[in-house]
Length: 197
Length: 197
DNA sequence: CGGAATCTGTTGACTAAGCAACACCGGAGC
DNA sequence: GCTCCGGTGTTGCTTAGTCAACAGATTCCG
Image (cartoon, rainbow over all chains, first blue to last red; front, side, top):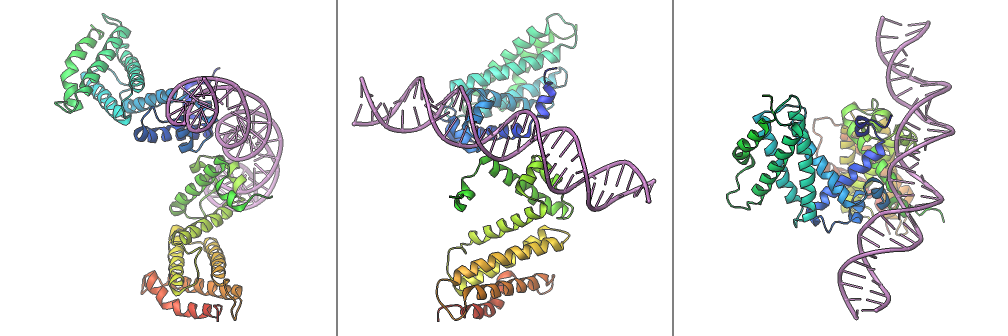
């Protein structure tokens, strides 16, 4: 058998766990103070107290590290609110939208000056996880439209709306939960097509 | 050339630095919550996230670890108050006495229930460093009594007085700097014999 | 008492991390 | 143009840390 995914997360060499967390932590501290572009692999390894070669044993480059960080960060937010392992409901959908809104908002504030590579990685990761999550929510029953299609549409819709909301600088940008209330009917009607008849 | 002592402290393998600090930190957190006797090597390595064998690569046993911890702790206090690298004066001597008082006091409070092995290690370490420090203070000039003798006497005197002071439970135990003022003349007169004529 | 359980030190084989050196690239500055 | 400099990936060799297993020692409890 190839290594079990659940094992990979928990029972791995303590050195590896340490090193990864040192890299992640150093990276997170450097991001706000230097911006993504100007933080170098050297900066990270220096702050983490590890050798530069060790970094490359874990990540191909700093972009992969960013990718991984976003993935972990968003996943953590999802799990914190127990949105994984639950079913579809308007209530849960609203919480999900709020989560995305806040995540995108704080993520962008972590990386100044704002950087297209950064933002597109956030977008890709978040949409991807959204899509997977929604699909699980819908997959439990048969329906008019298949779960994957509905999940894809909804994840793009949510992310697009959040982007627009987030770019409402200063003026009239409502708090995340007000925003969620506004867009909820739109997304919900979309998803109900994939709910049991 | 054998490895320079100054290099040993700074330019050593990052893994070694990490591991030692993990051990120290775990130990310090465990001491107050379990007491020295009931802290096992397993507890320490578990909390530090290292392998038990790795512990034994750094310290022969938990007593050696305690010894090292006390040494580091006291040295840090001395350096914080810049008592190393300075000369003899009543002012400096008073600060030194206060430092010892506070160190012994907080050290004992860190280890409950109080333990004879613990206390005797504190005593040995502190007296040893005291002796060395005082000797350096006195060594700068000729005098009636040689520096080593005076330093030894003074370090024992200081430690003995501090112990007595520290065992004045609750009642009438003055703060460290009042205590220092009381005993200062005693120690000072002792040391002045080793001062330049 | 006796044995079950737990902690201790120690060993040898394996793996991750460190280090130094390399070629390579892209920009800054003369 | 040119070099110089700083960052990037990559390599092979060394060293620290991990793991599992071992034989004592100690404690605990029926």
